Length: 358
Image 1 (cartoon, rainbow, N blue to C red):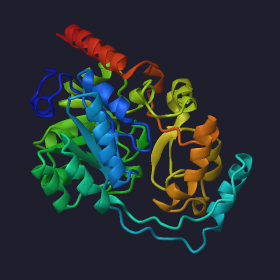
Image 2: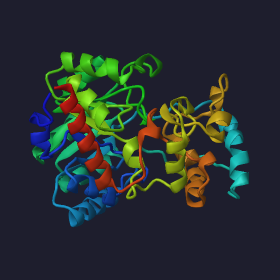
Image 3: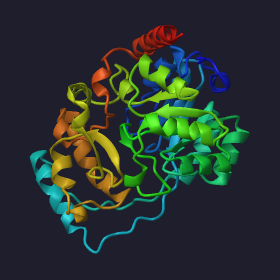
Image 4: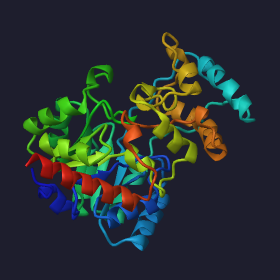
């Protein structure tokens, strides 16, 4: 097992460690820069940013470090299929709006897909890597990223998805295990049949594709990174570990919830965005995502826009029960400390673990 490999060389990093691109404000420019400066690879989660915000965020990272970093977008999605009535979804959120002193929930006016407006800004940013989630990006987006000299990565939750990404021209694939926090990247089959654990998924993807594989899901420390390398991955991508970083944009109540949650305290839900995503269970998740009451959840991205006012207000007030507390199944292994300290600690743990295995 070698910590340095083709992928780390292409990304220009010292460690086989990638900070996951968590959209919604968690991956601040300060977090990305600190991770990169410490020798790992940082990603801006830009799925909810406007083109100008993407360029501004990239500029801010460059003000803080001269190390390479990447940008992630959600791939274009089909137009949502609206249900016959949105009343159940509005009624499910109404009590929480009242508790937060917000006006009654209302359907969003605009849920247009931003990808085609965002991609030119990503190409202009000329970052080192471009990654996507939720599917295969359009061929012209891959070509634009390649022309700008970027390493192109995609997210897969099954071997079939990894093969499709490779065939489409991806330079590397992130194998996302079922333990991972945040949104599931599934795009071929239904998400239930694609909930494959990291330990089972990564070696199968490694054997199936010729491009480098990045392991993701439930990895929080150097032991997890060592396990990923032993399975044949070229690097490990960690999200929840960096939610806890001082530079993370996640609210303090989110960080406390991650550290307090046992593995069985996280669940995959559609309650907040309309797409399956793993987070710490709270009141909103239990009330909205109730078995047999699927009509309470609108399709993505409508549900995501519908719950945004509630989540924004809750974040400002530190109210964890109303937030999407995205987290993987190993949150308790994390620590609240500066991002550089997280990277340094994981590097020490990795070296120690690899040494013990020799």
